Image (cartoon, rainbow, N blue to C red; front, side):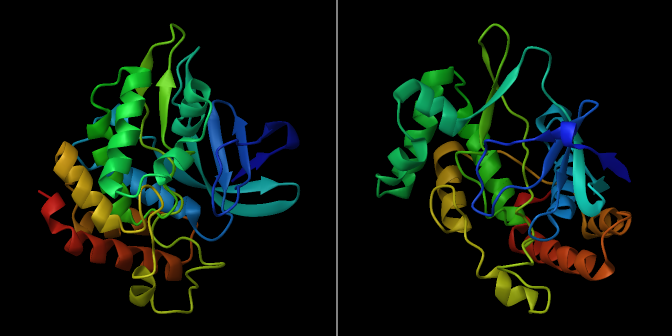
Length: 269
């Protein structure tokens, strides 16, 4: 359990359609409280399973679950070590595009009716601004991760790049998976309903509402860029070693993961 205080509280400018979680920063560690359900468990499971892929260690922001005490209230949530080096900054694609062109990236993308052209527009403009020539491959990895783990809240406010003290751009570790695994139990995916019909209701928010359509397009444009190596046994071990969440929630998250692993079996070794 970690106790946090008002001076640790941080306001996050990155918007979410689900509302903004309580966030704190203390001792080079970020903390987030659950807001709609079990976001902390989702962050923990997705990030630890990403380590069991062909991503490099520094490509992943690793989250662990935590119990947080704040103003006499107890929260489930998660924590992660700050991945920014001294003098470096994280800048979202929305803010980057707005600074460069003076308008919203999301609005500009959604003026384009073709989903493929939306993706190409975003990738091409970010390459133009940053010089990150493999940004299409990065987007392919991101869209694949979100499809496998059903992250319904990926948008231009939580896709980002890094900028160093010399104003050079770098790829950002994959972060912000809290809206994965049907974690919103307060509104959209109640615990008292069957999970498999609910899975059919989950929509993506990046380029269109279909995870599979997005995935097909990025694989066509930029190739398949990530392979996963975890097994159902490793999923079970990981989720059962988590110390805070109720078994009902753990079982549900595990069921979702096993179903998605079977659906996207071609992504696994």
